[in-house]
Image (cartoon, rainbow, N blue to C red; front, side, top):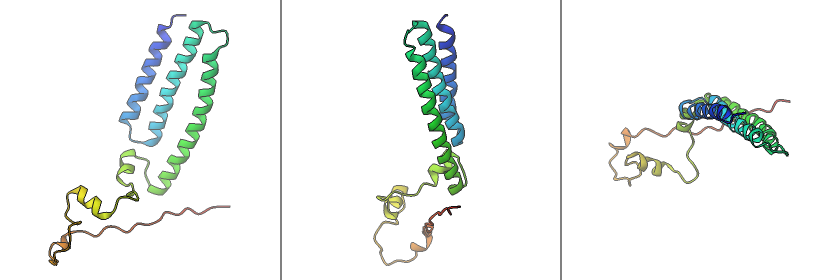
Length: 148
């Protein structure tokens, strides 16, 4: 068997997977693209195992192990995407990045200073400027009810 055919197919599959990860915004499609990249690697493992005529078939054994790990990864990944979709209402990667809550080190003053506002500046007693600054929205905790 010539190694050129499976290697070419593997490169094409991996390229389509990279394009899917970089171009798609839906988290489920990104997970599918990652799985496509992983299957391209599996194709290479099996092709090189056959080409080298390995008596232990280590490439095929590693491929089976990789498929088992990929099944667990896609199950956990889809569960995370489902919970994020229920909590945030979207699985769009860009919108999830925009709606992220600030970390424990981020406070309103630091966020306002990064945005270029002078809301973190000390109060000068003039209330005319303060009316133009909108109030920060209140944080709400998302709770899920456990069903029995």
